Image (cartoon, rainbow, N blue to C red; front, side, top):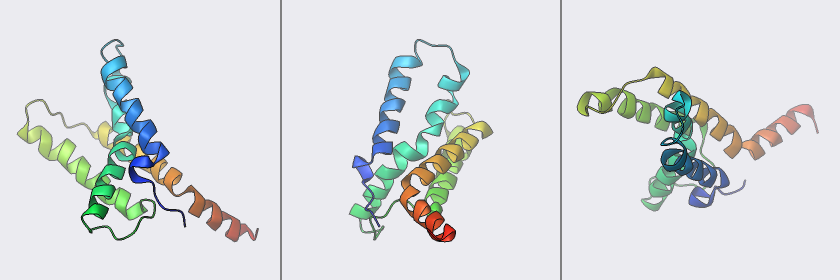
Length: 131
């Protein structure tokens, strides 16, 4: 199976660039609830998870270089949702708990997981069809 690129991953780079463009280029100029709210939340998993997994690997916590598994994505989704939408708003006055943010995190995580594991999913689909 192909190694995961971590900080060289194309989806990570695309999500990071899209976040930066939206954060500093688009949001200050465009009045859009989606661009001010959930757009960057969709990018949380694809932009942040590769960095966290790279750090975990560098520290010896993650022992493989495979694409993120469904359980890794889910674990980080739950942890970040609790921190950003639960604990954060209670500790910081600028934080706002928003369930739609969690939906956006999950949708971004689902798309990222499918993208990162597309080769394995294609192989499984081909084997199932007998190709």
